[in-house]
Image 1 (tube, rainbow, N blue to C red):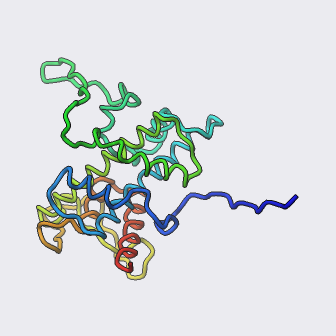
Image 2 (spheres, helix red, strand yellow):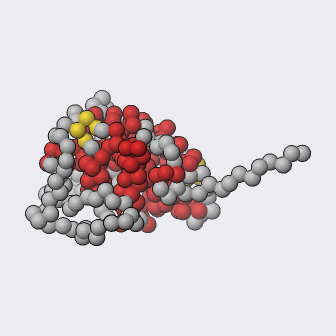
Image 3 (tube, rainbow, N blue to C red):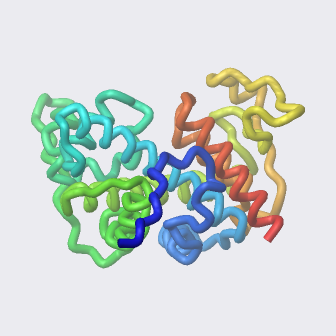
Amino acid sequence: MTAQPIRPERSRPETASVMDVSPFKPSLIKAVVRDVTPMHVSRSAARAAASVTRTVLTEIIEGARRAAAAEARKKLFPGDLVSAIDRNVELEVGGEWYDHSPTFRGLTGVLYDAEGVIVPSRKRSRSRKPSAVVGAHRFEAGVKKLLSSQGATAAPAMVRDLNGIASAFLTDLARDAAMVVREGGVKRFGTVTLVAPGEPGEPTPPPHLVDPLQAPSARRGDGRTIGSDDILAATTIQLFGGNLRQRALAEAHEAIQDASAG
């Protein structure tokens, strides 16, 4: 009997270079951008947005895997997603999906109006107008590919939640990138650098809370195109500090360099 070759164990990708092809295609990124703005999105910006979304989803999946492992399970369920977010507040992204998914129903708190009356939860919209919720199914192929690359399996409800979070996060990222273009830079959240952590000549990072009147961030480029710098700026708005933010920026930076070299 011929001996079978030993298959190497799968390990968590640490940088964007580990996965040569992003699970989220440029065509999907551009479709999401078109849902929220008529602006054009450059090739490098699409790759950066795909990279940031992949980094966020990878971290969420890793958190869910740790939660499942604590219960001696390999298959991921929606409860593992909730546990992951409870353990790491950085993972609380894509908030638009929370009001839609049964997983988060009752976990987002009860809202009251000025007279103390409970505000009912949003009902599912039947509108054909594109939205992060309506377009969540478009992310399923990428999410399944990402789960496979992580050696993870997930229940259909978990896949659905990951689709929704990815869709809501990328939609918010696109909106913020368009805002950066319109306003000529980041006016409220400080500055962005294209130097990845650990590179020579890396500047001292600014404090997380920057006086918007003293440190507005100017942008380059025209007012009709979302560029890679705009995606990086939007990332600093969506991800408030911490390791996830730094890793997302570093991996997006690498994706931009790959696009320039290609």
